[in-house]
Image (cartoon, rainbow, N blue to C red):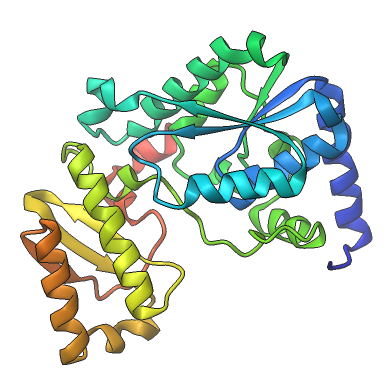
Length: 282
């Protein structure tokens, strides 16, 4: 368990104070580092009045639900599984650049309906201070449903959230970002159950083959796979033996074309096609 600086101790205490002020709270819990820290803080601040809610749908990568269950048990927080139906929303399936808005609207709508049953007064998410400087259409949905963001209120950045997670001995303190599988599909290309499943299988295959924790298989138009891995790993992927295994596997999964992105892995690279005025005016 790491030691916090006095400045970080003050931020930690502020986070606990904020959550204590919420009273009975439900945390949207994805098992990422941000929502895990919020869940931990909620349990410390609110005890039995805190609950973690994990949304499950076709866009959730394999293994994430099991990890959420294990983390909730480790934290000691009450844990509820909620099935969401964004794949029934034609706006979501069309995959516009604000697709995340429709996903989060579905999540927050169902959480709001569930709140009386859960016995909570406040709904909270894991947005951190850095998210305000990124393209996050889901933040609009959070505002519309009056979802609280305790990490933002406590002015915690992503790196500070990781520092706090490490101090609490949470195993996800260095976990890479794990956005939903639909985020790998190019805007304008329809989101389908088959596509997200194919992406999930391809990424799990590559992570095991290359012994990597973080990479992306982007699904472009015409079912083209664009593989993003860290630049220092590119030579490994392009070796004749591995290249043939990757090509054969991804074609067997249903990708028509298989490419490697020479710019390497970049989180949120799909947003490069969004006009700057839209990014600034979210």
